[in-house]
Length: 134
Image (cartoon, rainbow, N blue to C red; front, side, top):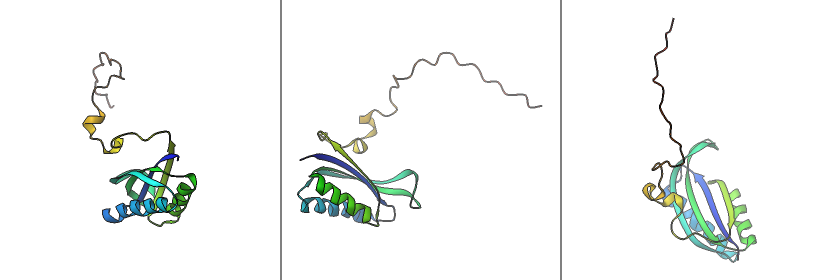
């Protein structure tokens, strides 16, 4: 069966238990249609880059699934109809990566803001002088 990865955002005013309950609910939808959830992660409440339906934050969840296309289409259809789900992204992948997703790894493990080898030498910088405001 094809492998998929899904990320969905639910409303910020849900409790953590309700948001994790959505993951279980959509997992059972897949199971009823012949698929299975290989792994699921709850990423927590995160601030979004722009407002969606008057919400600045949302509960993010991630699913790795092994399901036929018809099961994925049914799950996405139900997600679009669900009042608590704001956005859904589904990607077909060749293979699932081992271990936690990048979002769940510690910042130190990812190497964020460490050695910036991609930047060249900035050289000598001119001294800034205050402007004369006349």
